[in-house]
Amino acid sequence: MQPIDFRYRLSDQGRIVLGRLSSEETVEFELLSRRDREGLMDLASELRLLELYVKYVGSDADATLAPSQPEWHGIAPPRRGRPTLSRTARPRNYIVSMLVIASVSFTLIALLVS
Figure 1: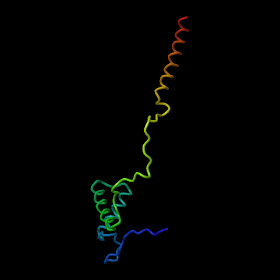
Figure 2 (figure 1 turned 180 degrees about the horizontal axis):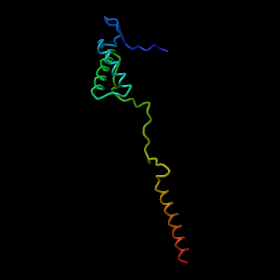
Figure 3 (figure 1 turned 90 degrees about the horizontal axis):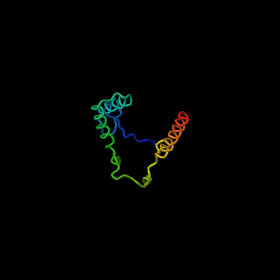
Figure 4 (figure 1 turned 30 degrees about the vertical axis):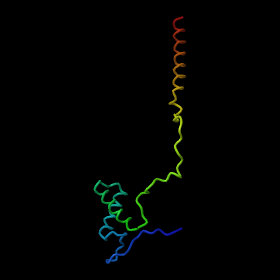
């Protein structure tokens, strides 16, 4: 198992600083990350967290935010043909049930009339 590289360094004040973030930005990043985990984020905070994250991840030349081309080799192509319907949504079942109801109704009407 390889150790995780968090790309941190020590600032002049002896504080741990993430990547290219300053000491103040690291504190802000930690605060916003905590608020995000607690579900207390607003749009401005989310945008600021994203900005700090991109700056932090951008400190490594190998880090990419998204692949340039989607990789399709691991994904099966969608099947062509009839879409699968659930058992209750098949039109054939509705026809059969309507025939049963109609035949029972006609039988009851015939019994009541005679």
